Amino acid sequence: MDLLRACRGAWDTPDRSGDPVDLHDHGLQTAALLRRSHPADKELQVAGLVHDLGHLLFPGDDAGHADHAAEALRPLLGDRVARLVRLHVPAKRYLAAVEPARALSPQSALTLRAQGGVMGADDVRAFAADPEADAAVTLRQADDAGKVPGLDAGVMEDWRPVLERVAAGAYARTP
Figure 1 (tube, rainbow, N blue to C red):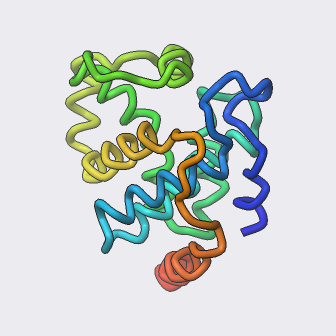
Figure 2: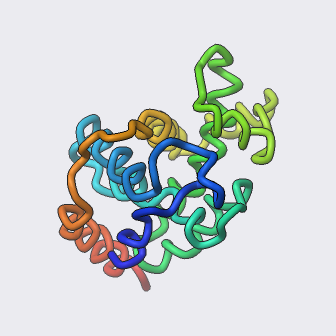
Figure 3: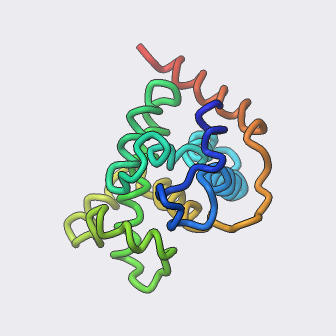
């Protein structure tokens, strides 16, 4: 919770030239969208809440932020949340390939290049075959939509019970 609260006033770019909301509001908006569209999938919702923590942990590393966040989160929130967080960047690359007319935020379009660009046909097939591909695309779509200045998406403390439930499930699965 402390790390999530530290996202207030932290941005996806060190100079604040990126997306129009801070990481705190972006995480809340993304998670709220996922809660609305997938109310039973708590791990997907939590992945939406925490997917951009890599920007806080390693400022300026657009290409690696998903991997950094996934590695940091795996011990606490489990393999699936970490996998979804890791896949939110490949999901952007995938969507750019299969829906080329789909609009990206200016910052997302800029970082797409640093993150490997639009997927080629082989990568598209490999991504689509991943068992978490649909969930990762859903996360990506919420990620793209969760950038609305001034939108009230609730408060971080409301997510504590969900985070605790997901963390308890991850702990229960650890050998």
